[in-house]
Picture 1: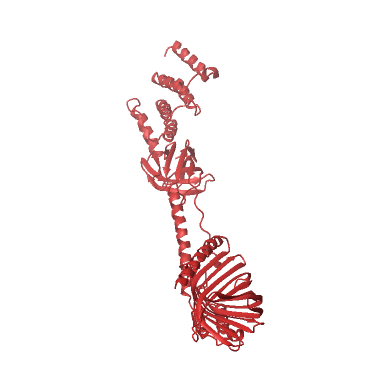
Picture 2: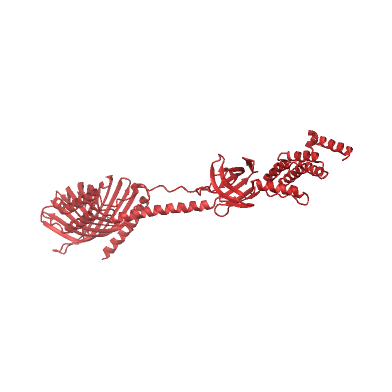
Length: 355
Length: 219
């Protein structure tokens, strides 16, 4: 490299790092310039440009693919500089950004790709891919989430509440390259979750079960459901008729019958004059009253089952049961009409450990 | 026979009016009404200084009752041709009463009102009016289907075409059957009352064995 070119490149880098200039540069532009410097074997300039391109915040920053490209070039530079350990660190970072990424073998020599594959094998990490917004009817569809792993390892995936308490375990076991999971909108007990913020938390574990990394996907869950009907009030005891004869009713019947029968027989003698021949029909009435009284006594005697009242009470209970079943059916119908809306945000990586 | 048809038509008209009004009463809270038609085996003993005449026969009778909260209105009508087996004399007996009262407790009614009796022989008739106070009680024998009832009454004062009223009283007992599935009720009872007239030293004792069937327009 000529002195002039070095000076020009240095001047270019200086201009780039000044705030005024930087504000006008996009991350993509810096990435492209970094790659150009790499191809011209200007590794110092390339390193600086690539790291700056990675330093941008979310807005205006690189896409995941471009971040992976930038890290690949950075790792390759470390390989070429004879720093395999530094290269491995960069590649592990690359793997955690996109476990599925594979460097282009037409661009990068085998030393680079081999080292990257080694880092990928040894770095246990997953990424979560989920729709940014998904609507589904309870019981008819589910939310589908994909996990992509860097290499074979053990994972556990569960949905947690905002206070980190577990709510529903979705999966626990090995993952090779990818894994599809579904969530039906219910918690571990099978109840529909209330609206709120939840986290799909995926932990990568080593063979001993220790957590290596955790990825969380924040999920805003909105449950849309019509109001259910309240349960019918229980039947009051006063609504039921006595199912067995009460002594009081038997005595009442006996007293009523005695008074009426006696009145039918004796009252005419008291009312009528001396010369009047009383009609025998009063005995017919008195006899009928006596028979009715005896019947009342026998059918209402204490302890005897009163079939009519039993049937009445049973009809009352049956009606209450039918009302309860109708409410249950209605509420079950409402439950099946629940719509769940899930809105996801950018996933968060936690608990990173060196592998 | 012609007279019987005429009376039946009158009863039917009265019953229609009663039911029309009672239905409105029954729509009110705590309101109920009963209306019924039936037959009575009637015996009328007329005791005078010259002796006792017994008239017997079958009468057409009708009952009606309106209840609203604790108030109660009872109306009764009876009419029939009675004959003397010994002398072939036939007389027409007409009785009507309208009592209004209260039910201090559900199974007791205290009522007061006029009672009219007319005994006609051809174109001639003797009428009397008594003002009656009545107590009636009922008890369940087979609730809610079968009830017994007892009523006693005293004639407080009255007047008659042929003499001044001295005293009178009566009693009644029987059974009431109520159907639960259909709004029909029936009454089977025995009734007796006696009225004494001083000036002509006359006693009238009427006995009726009554069977009526009607409608119960209760909520």
